[in-house]
Length: 614
Image (cartoon, rainbow, N blue to C red):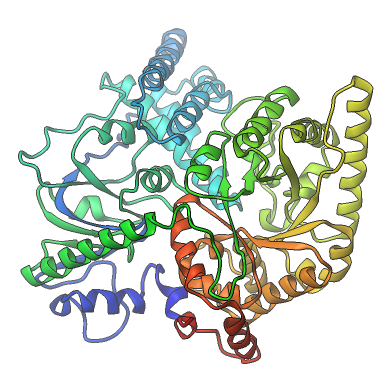
């Protein structure tokens, strides 16, 4: 495995170890072997997953535990009504406070924030939380706190079993909602209250077990320049908001909150996922130099915002954005995206007790199309799995990763699928909309979708509803079967989008959410790279466009590798666009194709550093 593949693996990181050594932390490091979670010596260094780049030197502000140790007792039968009312009132009070916060969001709040807060409000009224918790009070005579945490544990287990990384991390939403309601039940303020921050103008670093969206808003008003959490992942709320704010952040630290004290001098290295506690003068000097260099780098990148993404040999590269919510389209456009390469439509369906209707979906899709003003908008149809259906059936599949998910899920529910297809077709009159099917593995899935589209068109014709005369249909390449036998799919479809996250997982038989095997999740494995290259080449031979929309597309260290495979379309988080554009503008595409073609014939993984030449 390459250093790149290991760089964020808990338990060992040669790349990070070298990075810390370069910063002068020799005394804190063992002479050899992997970098442990906590290193002995004069300087303490912890590491996790860096989710927002940058460097901050400041003072730690350690948040108290948000999870409360609740009392567990049974109530008398005559007290059930009062206890149920106590829970209902607490849910309403916590919801009202969130509503007040939404109504008074600062103008410079991230666009995603209102949507995140609304998800928490919806969860508070979701029957899976409220009604089931009330049932525990009524049927088992649990006290409100016990009932709430019990139901929260049930929901948390269901979310943790989900295949999709983003949906799996939405279990954090349930936990944060429950902690907020518990605060109200205990007579504490529902909103986060920090002690008075230390005096002075030194940057402050929030160190917490987890941070909810509402807490993030309250923290923005202070001198908080970075966030560090024990929990979380690349798609946690802390990560999403930190990236939108341009604030360095590290998540999945494990025990940082327990190990740090208020006032500790800390260095947050969001690029390497390293947290250095009480550093020496030499380390401070090194990181101040890194801060200055990073600031100059970002300033230079901003100059590229309106520049074309063209290689040194004149190849135009399309850099698009991935979004989850309609309001993020404006963020993507401001970041310089030339289209929406992936609109994850399932986020319109999450955190609610009923499916969005055709009209609601139409408005969401149409708003994105209008915002992008003719630029391509690729809408991925609902990508959920059998581990949690949308109709309230919480049965967990034997193997959710291989079960009835994504396109299989939609085709098994023609009424729901038809509603989404009609909404997309109606929105197509407002812009350049394309439809993307997730987890395609069989040609009959493509044929069945085209039949469903024809049926949707007939229904719209009968209603006199307009739609675009032609709308392109594409497929995600995330199952090895389609990547290996791509040719017939290239004839049946209009375009492809390679979902590298799942493609790596299925190719290597690695659950990317399982920490025990996370070190085997390798985007540079020869088999993975050959599947990607095969897909790109076959699509281009058939005259069909192909993009990469997984994490590999937004990793600027891999940009030249993908260019060398012949890729001309990338889709990523808007915050990653400028880093990738810089690599594109400094690369010679044809020279890279020769080097990559040669490297792909070898049995060893490709070293991206070997491609860093014009």
